[in-house]
Image (cartoon, rainbow, N blue to C red; front, side):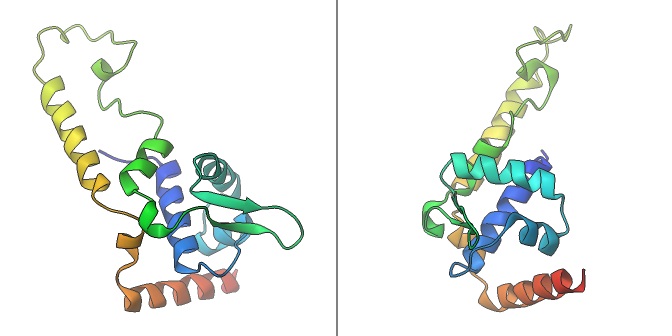
Length: 150
């Protein structure tokens, strides 16, 4: 299974906001620091804000910050919010036209694998992703240096 860029960017943004909770971040800044598309990040921010994970402060001194405490943001829930669907194969979708789906034994194991994937993510919160302070400090420094070099 592979998550979409939308989910990848959402998780990156949440991690950055959680690492620097006393700062407001702009979409432009996050885009530069991670070297990702500003337009795509705007869509990600809208998704996260609608779900209450991110709070958007308007105005000249505005920016983004977490809408919840990191320990209250479940990673499985974020992935479910940011993914369009989990149609791993054609027969998972509503428009199933697979000619062997009535006799195929693949769907069951794939459904089980998907459930296991999500169950593992459900065991973690955003706070769990931030448990290595030394590594995070180096990562923050690297993200700032890369952003300043642009």
